[in-house]
Length: 166
Image (tube, rainbow, N blue to C red; front, top):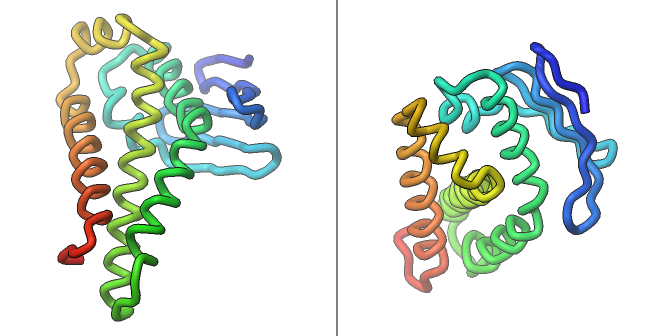
């Protein structure tokens, strides 16, 4: 592990054996590497819901969030396959409707995976998670949990219905 004012870097192995690396570089950029395949991305969820936390805690929870994405990858794959089977590819539609359903499915899938990753963080941190946010209140945290849960549940249900407006 390497940790300093610039960030944090760790080699990881998931519970199902996937090797990876997680690099938290300040508040504005993260890198997740699976094997040699890099997945750099801006940490949008971490940027908002870690606001106001001490730097060490921000980095630690952000690291766990990124690790949570890797740890919940099998769940995310199952969810995206279910959405694909019941969503955009479920039956012939005009191209416009298929594209709208595809966009909706991607949004729902991303919300589900973000929710899974943050659930991993909350589970890993335990009571410390609640204590940190009580000590450093953040209005984005409640919006995150309610919004991601709502998008995930409603979107998954709507996309899975036989007759849907999309």
